[in-house]
Amino acid sequence: MQINNIVTNKKSTKRNKKVNVDMKQYGMLVALIAIFLLFYILSDGKNATPTNINNLIMQNGYVVILATGMLLCVLTGNIDLGVGSVVALCGATAAILVVDKGAPVPVAFLAALAVGIISGVFSGFFISRLKIPPFVVTLGTMLMGRGLTYTVLKAQTKGPLPESYVKVGAGFLPTVKVSFGGGTIDLLAIFVAALATALIVYFQIRSLKEKRKYGFATNPLWQIVLKNIIIISILWFFFFKIARYNGIPIQLVIMAVLVGIYQFITSKTVAGRQVYALGGNEKAARLSGVNIKKVYFWVYVNMGLLAAIAGIVLSARNASATPKAGDGFELDAIGACYIGGAAASGGIGTIIGAVVGAFVMGILNNGMSLIGWSTDIQKVVKGIVLLGAVTFDVLSKNRKN
Image 1 (spheres, helix red, strand yellow):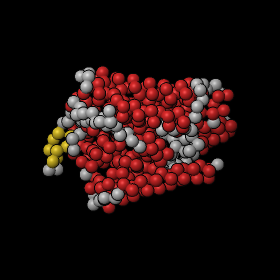
Image 2 (cartoon, one colour):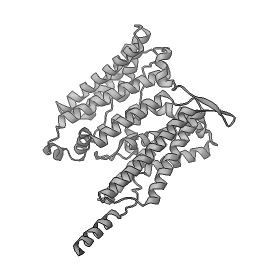
Image 3 (cartoon, helix red, strand yellow):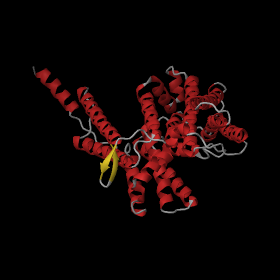
Image 4 (cartoon, helix red, strand yellow):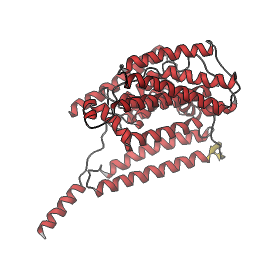
């Protein structure tokens, strides 16, 4: 009887163990809120208007898509410098087929996706099979991709693109608008926000029950409640603003679906765990049975596919394809990953972190443009933010070790 009581008490103690929320995990989310509030003050609230919130989503959708794929490259301890050129080449391919060849829009999209995949296979072959450093291979694809884009477009803009094409990057889901506060509001956007809120609460409760069931340490209840209130408040703020505008952008739907898929892949699948293992220690991953060549290959093929999707979205939003499209996008995608918490040594970082990093960059760009800062100053500020975020991440990691 006494032994049973001791065992029960030990289990109870284990189950009641509490651990504070890891602020480092949510540091960039706090930074995102702080940066938004700063520019809210500096711009007299211009960055919080429904029109600007919609623009913020439209201007950063393709960066989020690229950052989703780039994170997998970063997790392996590498980067892909060619994504901006692949974005331009894929957009140019689709635009030429539609405008010059009269091809149906779906066929043009499939052709653009094929070009992106071929580009990824090209990079993946040299990196995984021939063991050429990814920096060199992707630098080559960057130069070749940009050159091919200028060649196929003959250094000219290709457009205008048809409405069915443009809708992918600049269109909206059907709306159900009602009068509200001297204007209108989209009920579909409000419904999606409510559904997302319910899912957040459901998964949080389920996670808490599972941790208690198996005796894992949990956060204090007040910290869990506060964290979710902040996340849900941000969610409702954005959805309320787009509900007051034209509803849910199709670009947001594409972005959300891709983020959901890759969040699942990286956190719940063997393939995702292998990427993290490779980034953490390549030799240990190989010895544990991970097919290193296969992981490198699919990561870069995947990056080519997502670059193609971003190219379609960008050309659709601009209603045309241009030779300079995607210029510098690789830097935005890489910056989003590192700002979002992907340490320079690889093996650390999440899809959600990369998304937050992309929106930190986006809010910075948007806010500085609203208050009239020159592009020169904007680059300096973005560089400082990137260096500061990575420095904080690395120092925090070293302190733990």
